[in-house]
Length: 133
Image (cartoon, rainbow, N blue to C red):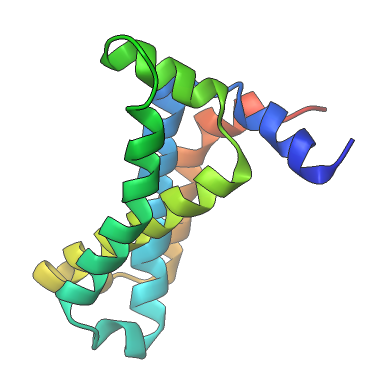
């Protein structure tokens, strides 16, 4: 069994709620990275918008290619969840975090410990689906 196959099987156990929590975690990770690296704080919000649109376009094309209603499409999308889609999801949420940081600079003014605590809290439910021991 290859590593991608193993991860794909673990990622396919997620529910729609888990994907929502994962989006929140990826956004907080993006805010943490932007708060730690000064160079990212100097980028224009248009760069982050471009990054978000480029990363999210293949995800939406894939999701809306399935038949059925919105929730049926979302379930089929999760059934075909793989690491490549998670990378695109992270890049889109990182771009969204960059846009939020540009418009609301107070979001990147916290100590890194608060970001780590928030990441741990929001990651508990998705991690319970992917733990295998």
